[in-house]
Each structure stands twice: as structure tokens, then as C-alpha cells.
Amino acid sequence: MKRVLKLGMIAVALSICFSGCASKSDRKSTETVSEFKDDDIVLGEVVDGVYTSKMLDLKFDGNANDMDVTAEEEFTNRLDGKAVKRSDMEAVHDRLDKGYYIGDMEAHDNKNKGNHVEVEIYKDIHHEMKNGLENYIDKEVKKQRSEQKERFKNPKVEKTTRDFLGDKLLSVDVIIDEDGIESADTTLYKKLGEYFIEIRVRGDNAEDIDRYLGMFEKYSDSGNNAKQ
Image 1 (cartoon, one colour):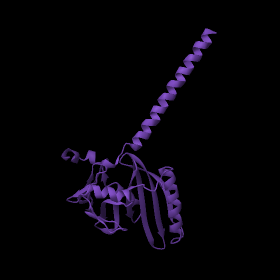
Image 2 (cartoon, helix red, strand yellow):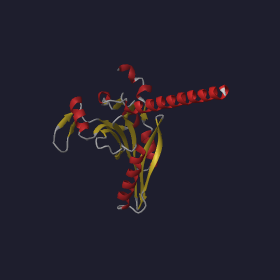
Image 3 (cartoon, one colour):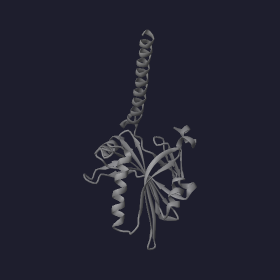
Image 4 (cartoon, helix red, strand yellow):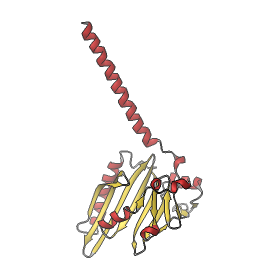
């Protein structure tokens, strides 16, 4: 009887331990998502044709890739017409809090100006992604597929998981190849607390998308971080 009681107590103790460990792990995972705060928002910069973002750990060298890289120095709110300077972080936060996008950088192919790369930041103030990023992307795929079918017979619209600089990022891909029209668009999504980063790429085909995404480097691997 004592042996049975002792074994029962050990089982209860182990159960509590495992439950506690699991809860702690879950909390850590949740905290990792919410660790990113408003004060952590820092816009990237473009200097001599090279975009760097310490916050996003990104670098894009326009000179090495024959791309024209720019960053807007001023944004205009569509509804109130307010001009927001890139250097005024208080105004930048106000713009994000109102649901506007911030274009962190834009790069156009010097050989084909229609092909480009963009990095955008926004805050999910309407909680569109409250049920998770994957559910949001599933809805976006349905929406894009419906819109593209109004223009094309067989558009290819799908959700993809891409390996981007060591991160697995979900994307929405739109490929058009019919009636002499060929184009490819993809949008990669990354979540930082309440904020979302979109990396948008436009090319002539799927190979262009891979090539443009391959032009990105990790800021932390570039050696530029020593300057900060």
C-alpha cells in the first residue's frame, strides 16, 4: 500500500513539473511575439545606393545589383494631408497608429524599371490578423485569386513558405503567364509584435522573384553593424 501511495505521489509530482515546464515554454513563446514594442521601431536608411535596416537585420546593395535604391524622406497621410518627415519618429509612430503604411525602401531594376522591390511597415490596428498570420494569408489568397480571375483566365495564386535569409516566411505569390502577358508578384510577411513587415517583389517571372530576393543580405553579416 505504501509503495502504491509513493508511486502515486511521484506521478503527481512529475505531472506538475511537466505542466509547469510546458506553461513556462508557452509563456516564453508568447512573450517572444510581444517583446517587440513601439519604441523598437527604427526606420532603415539608404546611403550611397545601399539600404540598411538594423531593426530588420537587412541590407540591400543597389550598386552591386544594378538597382536604383531609394527611401522616401517624407510621407503624406492620404486622409488628413499631413506631411510626415522620416526623421520625425513621433510623427512616424502617429502615422503607423492611424493605420498607414511606412515605405522603408524601394529598389527598381535599372534594366527594367517595372521590376522592383519594396519593404513596408505597418501596424495591425484593425486586428485583421487576430486569428493568426496563416489564416490572414489564406484569406488574402482567396481575395487575390478572385481579383485576378476577373482579368485573367488561369492566374496562379498560392500561399508559399519561403526560406528568406534563414527565416521561414509565408508569402502570397501571383504568377500570370497568358496571352502574351507575363508577370510575377510576391509578398512576404513577417510579424514583429503588433507590427507587420511586408517585402513586396515584382518581376517578369518566378525566376526574377528568386533573383531579387537573393539580393538581400543580413545586416548583421555585412560588417556594417560595427558602424552603429
